[in-house]
Structures are given as structure tokens and as C-alpha cells.
Image (cartoon, rainbow, N blue to C red; front, top):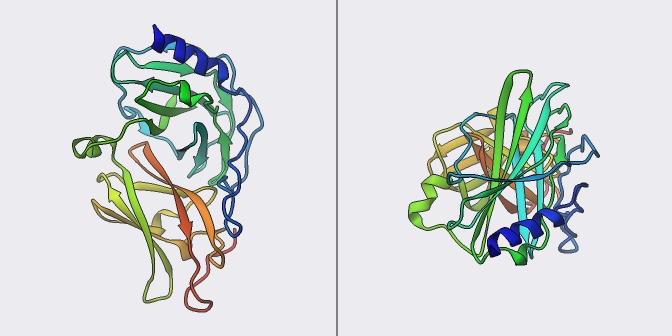
Length: 275
């Protein structure tokens, strides 16, 4: 019963308008917010609670042309759907937030769909969760965005954990999992972002907030490394210290971390092309 009351409190506290952006950190760093173009200022409404009778699993539908970025900090959640490809006019985006404490049946909060078209790098802000301190001690929270275009449905998912962690045996089920990042300058002076972690064999989508590297700039080196050519990623400012929400998504399932880009000496690397 306590779990049900908690979920109801969360449902009431979910904002039906777009969430405020996280505050700026560090005098030389960019705020943690998507730097692409926001495509809508509409509202997600008509939320309802639905008891699920199976454990949370990754999307069974085809991956969407986009990723779900979820950032959890100090009891606040900031979530976005960022397009990585063209999503045509008339498409609908339906959001479901699933709460799973590993004991009771997972509870899903479903929202009425909204309708937007997207260019790559454009985004919508997803409903935010407040009062995270009222959750059960351990919780897996999954955001799913179903993109419906005509009769075709694709999906993107992202997640975060509250009061719990993944064990070694869990990593393959939650892959991709980002464990760290570093930078290097290639022989041709291109700036390379090295993403370490646990990755599947699926083709990766990578998003640095509103910047979407082309497929040609993304290399899955191994099951533990993905390289991204930042010098081929339009719109990035490689001359200054910046923080980005970095997402790697494979098979429609994504992991997000905060990535701090540190510039190198001028003329030692190739800048990124303009947007």
C-alpha cells in the first residue's frame, strides 16, 4: 500500500508543462541543457496509472530516430527526447514512465500523445518527476517514447536508478552502459571522443545534447569502446570548456552521463563545422 501511495504522490507532482533546465555549474561551463532547437511548448496531459504485470524490458519495437536523455540529480529529473533523424509531420510521440521497485508489479504512468515533426538535433522536454525522495529505497525508473508515424511505431528508452546500483551480471541486460570518457587528437588532427563502457553489437546512436554526430563519425571499436569524431559533428564549440548530456543508444535503449569537454591548444586540432 505504501508503494501505491508513493506512486500516486509522484503522479500528482509530475509537471504537465516543460521542465526547468538544470542550473549552470562552474563559471566556465555550459548549463546542462539541450543546445538544439526545441520544437514544441505543448503539454503532456491525461496521465493515468497502469499496473504492469511483467518486469521492465527494453523496447520490442524498432528503434526510433532519436534518443531519450534522462539526467537525475538531487531528487530532480530532467528528461528529453532528441531526434537523431528526420521525423515527419503528423507523427505522434507518446510518453510512458515506468516505476519498478523490484518487489511489486511495475507501475506505468502514461501520457496522452503529442504531435510534432523533428529535424535532427531538435528536441522536446519530457514530463519531469519531483519528490524523488518519496520513492521506495530502491527504484528503476524508465522513460519510453513511442513515435507513431502512420501505422509504424518505433521507440526510444532511457532510465535511471534511485538508491540502487547494477551488479556485474546486470550490465549486459542494461547495455549500453557508459563507464567513462576521454579525448584524443587523431593523426589528422580530428578531435576524438572515446566512450568506454559495455556496448552491444547494435549500431550506436550518439547525442551530445542538441548535436548529433553523423553515422560516419561514430565507430564502435569494440564491446567496450565507441569513438566519436567531434571534428565532424556540426555545431560543437571545441574551443571552450563545456558540459554536455552525452547519450549512447543501441537497439532503442540509451544511457546518459554528463560529459565535460576540455579544449586543447589552438591549432592543434580541427574545429567542428558550423551548424
